[in-house]
Length: 155
Image (cartoon, rainbow, N blue to C red; front, top):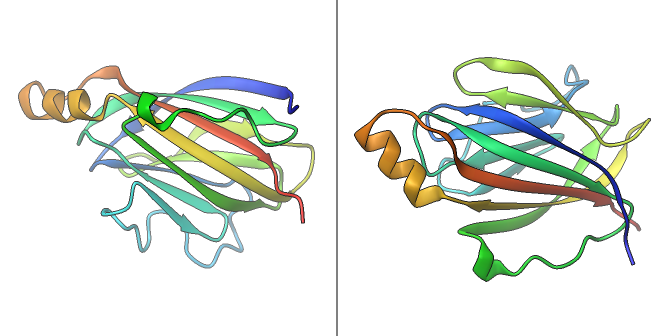
C-alpha cells in the first residue's frame, strides 16, 4: 500500500479560467506556460507542464498537493466535478505554480530531491460555484478546490 510522503497547500491565483504547474527548471521546455494552452481540456499536458482549466474566470483556488511513494488510494469520481490523470516528467524534482495573469509565482512544489518520471491525478470540486462567483461578484477565495496527487511512475 502506498504511503503519503509529503503534502502542502497553495492558494493559486486563477485568471482567464486557468493556471499551470510547470517544471521549475523550465529553460529547456519546448512549450513554456501558457503557450498552446488548450482551454477546452480540464487537464492539458505538455512536456514538463500541466495546464489546468478552472470553472471560474478570476479567483483564488485552494490546491492541496500530495506526493506519494506509489499510486495513491482511488478517488471516487462522484466526489469531484472533474478528474484526470497524466504523465509528468521533472528534471529538478520541483514544480512551479504559474498564473495566466501573474506568470510564475513564488510557490514551489517539491516532488523529490532529483528529477524523474511521475504520474499525476488532478481532481477538482466547486467549479460551478466558482463560475457563478466570477459572473456575479468577480472574485472568490477557496470556492474551487483541487487535489493534485503525484507518485513516481514505474517502468
